[in-house]
Image (tube, rainbow, N blue to C red):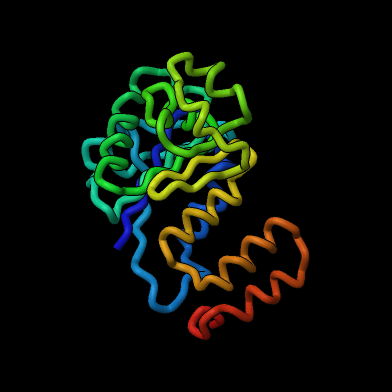
Amino acid sequence: MFTIYVYVLDTLADWELGYVTSELNSGRFFKKDHQGVSLKTVSYSQDPIKTMGGLTVIPNCLIDDIVVSETSILLLPGANTWKDPKHDAIIEKARKFLSVGAMVCAICGATAALAHYGLLDNRPHTSNGPGYLEMVSPSYKGQSFYIDKPSVADNNLITASSTGALLWAKQIIEYLDVYQSDTLESWFEYFNTGEPKHFFTLMQTLPSSNEN
């Protein structure tokens, strides 16, 4: 079973997590023989956090409760508060994830936090456009590994810009292998284009057990 740890912090950008958390938590398009997925919110304390959209989230567990293994996934969302030193602990945990081959997925402001600690200096990655990471993280040295795309997957690291949430979600779901390939493609094309034909194709790819 995969355990998905979703880091939550004040000013969390709600929309950046929307696609991936809703699909992984609901499992509505999962294939029949998928591995189980458990989704937990985690933070530096168990105090409620307030998202950018004004929602209140109470963390399920603390950073020290995270089990680092190859079946653990760490999701780091964008937020305006990443420079607060109290988030240093989760970045150190991300370093441990990467070192053991566990997946780390960072989007928008979270990529700047990874860059600040040198975690993007030697791996293909993206962020909010060329020059952004240099601007917000003076210690960043990964310019030669920067790829100007909405989302970039490099083995057990997936990074995305603030506009890359849909592709980021697709790459995470693909890594977890919980969708049939045709289901994933149809799901992505439907939300990417809004064309009804992709929705009907999506419905046709689902196992019969999901149609009830």
